[in-house]
Length: 85
Image (cartoon, rainbow, N blue to C red):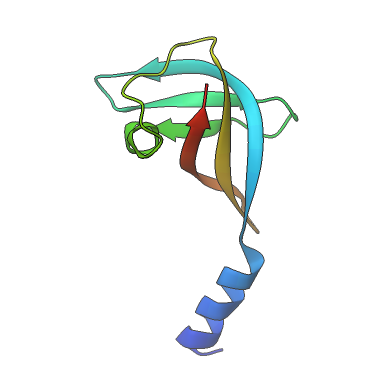
């Protein structure tokens, strides 16, 4: 398999899904936190960069949120955009 074919394969296997959940923790000094999805999926990383793309500066523990998550063959890979809380 060539590098181009492998890249195309991984792009086709990835999809973005929208998930609701609760912020379980967020450490401002480290720049990231964890979201516990409502649907029982494994916890998802919430980065400060993701918050900023959504127009937010902080995330409060216990807040309900909806996020876009990159879903690939290995599971949720990253939070791509923080939508609202």
